[in-house]
Image (cartoon, rainbow, N blue to C red; front, side):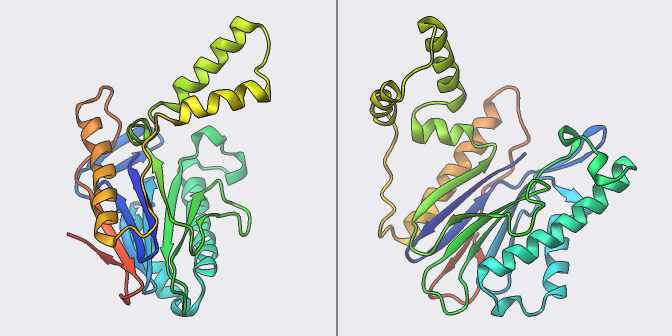
Amino acid sequence: MSVAVLCNLSDGLIIGVDSAITVSDSNGIQKVFEDGEKLFQLAGKIGVAAYGLGGLEGRSIGSFVHEFELAHADIAALPVSDVVERLRQFFMGVYTRYAENLFERPFDEIPADQKGLLGLIVGGYSPGAFLSEAWHIQIPVDAAPNSSTRLCGPGSFQVNWFATFIPIERYLLGYDRNLLSEIFDFVVELLGRQLTPEEIARFAPIRDKYGYRIMLDSMPIQAGIDYVRFLVQLAIQHHHFASPHPVVGGKAKLGLVTYKEERFRLLD
């Protein structure tokens, strides 16, 4: 399933992924490659990370990203938001064709629980911009025009994580969201009623005080790189030992673009 982490800072944007790629068909997982590519440079100062489906139509996601770039020669001059919408349209078309051939029926007749997910994290700089931004595309969930999610606009400094991220949330938040949900259900059952907004508000500070506060304002780029690498490796190492073992593995791979650099570049 992969893990991906995005960190948007005042001096640039960092994306990290694990390197395991899963190849599946209608019969389930067929192969896992430990040293795959899921991080790509696009249109100069934009980076794209992929998670979920490891390929489509027997091709890697990277080959489709390259095809998209060749077919849209003008994207370097477009705002990031416009590039995201074109990328969504392109991959929605590819995915629809792939799914219809795989299941041999019209796309709308394929049950939702049989449709896989391709997630794309897109971040970087619009032409003339001095602050970076990031977006999230989920195929085929984001089927409608302009349905991609803006994760952070210019000047919004934050960290986001995607796909198989539970170890990261447990570390940073101090709890598992699923455990929290079950505890609430248990309390509601004991009380015989729903919790009031006032009761939930009283609980929130107790929940939040056990999370780690990471200062992102004015964080140097190197610190951001180290932080993203740590979070990706945390997920990889957790699943190396945990059982059952989901498809997260290989090594951490990172990409970076800053206001000083002309292109999104992959890091060693």
